[in-house]
Each structure stands twice: as structure tokens, then as C-alpha cells.
Length: 248
Image 1 (cartoon, rainbow, N blue to C red):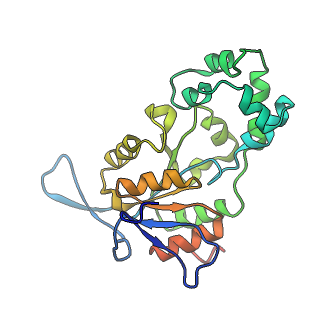
Image 2: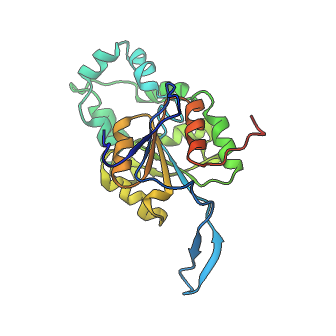
């Protein structure tokens, strides 16, 4: 863990909490910043509320069906599925290197045929909001925070959107299938802050995988490891994020 780069923030006394990293010590995030109008050299005072919130999707916002539903669909254990699936096909699909038809042809090492539409239907049935997360997103939305998905996922993110309508709360801005990059590649994080046109420290990134959180910290983004929605709410409050309480 990069203790020389980041401060580990915990409640006192420390409960079983998520990990919260700061790239540096700072006072609570400023609520707005001054924006510059690119068509005019004089600054405009259109405000942009900070911090910008970046969310991983699978097992942070949405339950990932891969670990239980997908093995059951194939009539296998998870261990058996991992042993017989192609080692890179899904990663290539997530990166947008191969399309759905190509995934079907190489999903398994032995290239056995399978019911692709059945697999998609299985995954769709398995997608659901993690407990408490949708309410938290609503509370953040009510407080006018800018929120984006920052996720390793293929074009099937559209299935998630079709079922759960996540775009009510955040934008599907940073998906690996669009950028050809995956977390924890530092270039993916740098592409995000370049697109947003803010300093990395003006962002908070939430992910259930610690290696992805550490990579965010490595480029100067504040990172939180997701454990559950209640702990995430507490961590965001500690960082000075306004969260509506009237809806709870």
C-alpha cells in the first residue's frame, strides 16, 4: 500500500470501514470552481460543483453476475469456468478489441459453441443495484454532484442501462470499451481527468478493488474502496461531500 503517497483515513475508533485515500492533506472540497469560457478570454462564473465523483460499476453500483449466475448458466463451478474459458477473450471484449460475434467464437479455449443470447439474458437477470447504493446516488444527485461511470466493461453496459436506468444518476462516460484501456492502467485515469478538465485532486474515485483505488491515488485522485453503501456514505461525509438527509 502506497503509504508514502497517500494518507489512510479511518474513523476513530476504526470500525470495519472502507479504505479512504488522500493524495494529500486538504480542507473539505470547495463547492464550486470558476470556469473559463473557451470562446472568451475573460473568466465566466458558471460554477461546477466539486468534487466530481467517479464510480466503478460492477460490485460497486451493480451486482456482478459473473461469479454465481454465469457458472450456473454453463452448469459449472466458478473454478471450472475459469479453467476452460479463454484467458483473454473477455478482457479483449471489455477493451473493445473484439466484438460480440468474435467473443462468441473464442469465449472458451476449445471454441465450443454456446447460447450467446442465453448468456446475455442470464446476465441481465443478474444485474441489480447493490443494497443502498441507488438511494445514495439519488441523494448525491439531489445535491447536484457531477457523477460518471469509470468502469472496465464491454458494450454490454447498455444491457445494465436498459434494465437499471443508471443514467438517471450518472453518465456512462468512461467505459473501457470506449477508450481501449482498462483500470488500473494509469493512462486510463489520466485520460479521465484530461476529459473532465479538472485537477486530479478535484475527483473522488470509488471502486471495490483496492488495486484500482491505489492506481487512482497514484495519479493524484482521492480514492475510496467500496465495502457497502453505509460505509461509503460515511467516507464521503468525512471528505466534506454534501449528502441529502431528508430523503433517508
